[in-house]
Amino acid sequence: VLFRSMRAGVPAERISLSSQELPEDFADLLCQGVHVNSCSLRQLERIGQVLPGHEVGLRFNPGRGSGGTGKTNVGGPDSSFGIWHEWADQAQALVQRHGLKVIRIHTHIGSGSDPVVWQEVSAASLALVGRFPTVHTLNLGGGYKVARVATEKGTDPQVVGAPVKVAFEKFAAADGRRLRLEIEPGTFLVANAGAVLARVQDIVSTGAREFLKLDSGMTEILRPSLYGAQHPVHLYPAKPTGATRDYVIVGHCCESGDLISCAPGEPETLASRALPAAQPGDLCVIGGAGAYCAGMSTKNYNSFPEAPEILLRRDGSTALIRRRQTLEQILQNELPAEGL
Image (cartoon, rainbow, N blue to C red; front, side, top):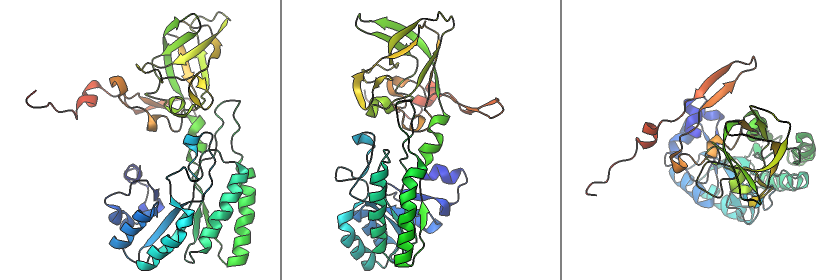
């Protein structure tokens, strides 16, 4: 993502990188101005050894998290993200040993954004800032819950932000530092700005359930299969009858987990949706696909090609922004094994 951003013209100094895997050329990136947040003591040691005296950020696991499911909770003792908050002494020792200047503390708790947890984590994060006198920025990450369906409750930035504002003001009064607040609300901004347009390929019944098979699925939207995420589904029959039916909506992969209509938070539990009575060829729109869909798809599973992407402009016009992948492109990096 970092290199894609730079190729798109984003200046290096406007990029902040928090990664499970520190790039091999991290020193060059730091020298170009990229802000790298050490996400482990080992990462911090590597940076200190290669670039002693350099500016650096520290990502801490603050000890608490908030996620819709365990798979979207990135804080607390069951999460590998960041330096465990109890190892702050070790982080300070590495910073002093290598003469590093810590300018940013970064924390991130997950996609639940419980206001109470946010308040607790912001206080814990400010306490970590207090241990590093050169810090001028606190990044509280992203994870603002997006309500993709009516039964979900999304994050209200005013509600979660109010106690954080007060905490920053108290910190400034007590410490003398007016910190810069950074947040990462990317998903919150774009999640509901995209949709997958599919067609009904088949309708089958087992007597107990009726399945609506689409020509899309986990190759474009993995979230339901991965952690039971909910996406709105709208069906547009070519010949409306006014009747509705309960369908379990599945994808086109030879995989029982290729499921669109799972139960909330339960990727292995089938759930049905009441939709207009369908026929093969009818259009089906899966909403909420503007974030964590194309970017985390099971690309080329069962050798299905990457889907094209269309931009819908405000004036109603469209533009192709990604072509459909061809079979030749799928195969181009595969080499024949000699001697077989």
